[in-house]
Length: 368
Image 1 (cartoon, helix red, strand yellow):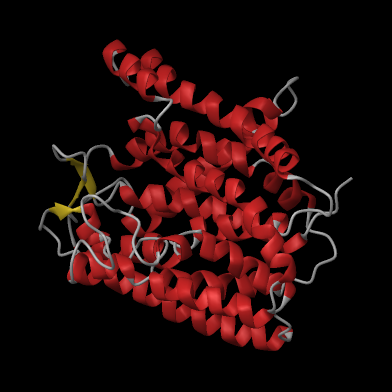
Image 2 (cartoon, rainbow, N blue to C red):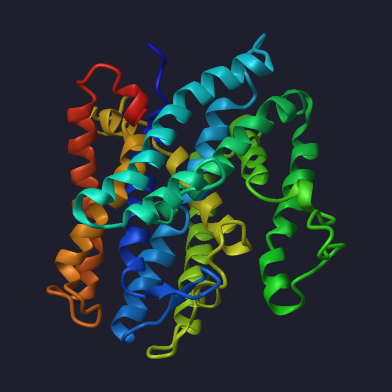
């Protein structure tokens, strides 16, 4: 049996709950889509403004980068003697069948309760080769994750030989590129060679989630800090990054003022300086877990988080409707309680469902 890394299992479980917290929070500021398929946002009151900032911004934003980091932490560098095609076969065989299964489910299953028309379903099915269906926006994550898998055999040989200083150089360049979303918004939509005939700018190949991949390898191989130092620096980075992330939403999101979601979420992209800082800090803190073995509940749940992530929107939507009942300004319980309850109930429903499905033959092709 493959030996499990205890703190990674804890990250999987916590980050999975964080994802559901993020999507529970979205009910309290996302109000629809405009003609360009851009999300529209508006906060109903000061209470929603504060609690969305806290739950979504302060707590939830590190969830996606944490999943990226642990994938790289476990897979990079590749095992000695493993070739590109063997790596692709093993990784894609594990993630693609459940991914494809849920692409189809989100395109077809809502027909059963009138959640979409046949025309909408056919439209989704026609586009599945190119993108996720509108009802499954959370599946965007799978595409950059797969891209990391595709690039791992390319960068793995370099990481095997790179010195700590060389990796830090790359991480420094990556950290600088996290300013790009802000430059696009507040300086120019085109920087460092970008134009309508060229989207591959100066720092394109050093940016994005590849930076988290190299960061994960650096922490695993080169970072020799004591537990005390990890706790101190991790706490500071988490507090600074998460606090800025929460403040950025609170500052921009004025109750009663409609704007596009990207405007309100101007510092919430996963490759921004604040999210990088908070992710680095939270990951360091998780590495301080020194248990020899995690509780069986954590281990078993961690094994099923992929399936839980894939299916959670099916549960989150009706649970959210039950609490909100069409009035985000005054749900059936206060907003400070509604958001975590929606997330926790969704998490529990997914945990139970994946557990039941895991007993079925071939369940790994559905829930991973």
